[in-house]
Image 1: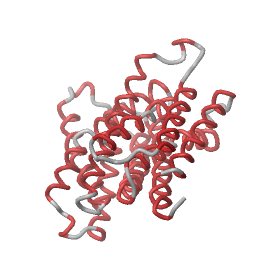
Image 2 (image 1 turned 180 degrees about the vertical axis):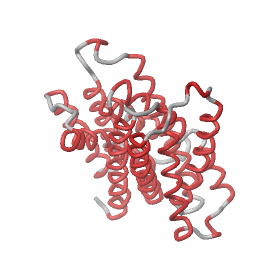
Image 3 (image 1 turned 180 degrees about the horizontal axis):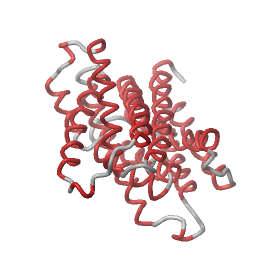
Image 4 (image 1 turned 45 degrees about the vertical axis):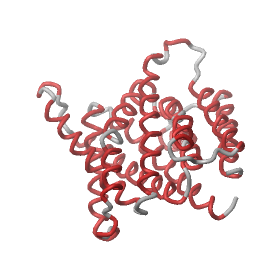
Length: 291
C-alpha cells in the first residue's frame, strides 16, 4: 500500500469505527425517545462541536461560495434525513443488520464517483467492493423468514445508504474546491440542525417526546461520535477518491459487531457472521491494496 493510499484508508477506517460507535449509542438512546427527537439531539451535539473548533480550524479563505453551497446542499439530506432513516432502521432491525444493509452504499458511491467525478475504477477495487456487498448480504440474511424483522424495513437503511453515497460524491466535489473537512462538517451540520428544529417544531405537541436525561446523554455521545466520523470521512475524501474511501468506510459493520459483543453484549457470533466477516475483510484489503 503506497503512502498516498495509506492516509485515506486510515481515516476511512477511523470513520467506520466512529460510525459504528454512533450506531450503538443511538440504539441505546432510542429506549428513551423517538428517532426524530434523538436525531435532533445528536445533530445538535455534532453542530456544537464543530462550532467550538471552527475558530481554531477555519480561515476566511476557506469560505469558498461554491464549496459552501455544495456542503449546504449535503446538509439538507445528511445527516438530518439519512440519520432519521438509519435510526428507524436501527430501531426496527437492530444495529448490526441495519448497519450492514446500509453498507451497500459503496455500490452507489462508486457508481457516482465514476460517472460524476470521472474517477477510475481499478479491477481490484471493483472486486473488493463486490466482496464487501456480498458480506453485507450474508450478514443481513436470515433463514427465519420475516419473523425476526420486517422485509420492508430494509428500505430504511437502503435509503440511508443512497443518501450517504450521494453525500460522499458531493462532498468530494466540494473538497476539491476547498481543502477543509471542518468547513464541510460545520456547514452541513448547521443546515441539518436548522431543518431538524423546523421539523420538530411543526410536529403536533402530542407527538413530541419529552427529552429526558437518558435520551440526552446517549444521543449527545452519539452526536459526538458521528461528528468525529464525518470529520474523519471528509479528511479521507480530501486525500483519496470516492471509489477508495467509501468501500473502506463500509467496514463499519465489523466494528459494530465487535463493539456490540465486547461492550454491549448484544450480538451472537455464529457461522453466518464469520462468513460475512471473511467476505468483508478481504474486500476492504482488496480495495486498499489494489487502488
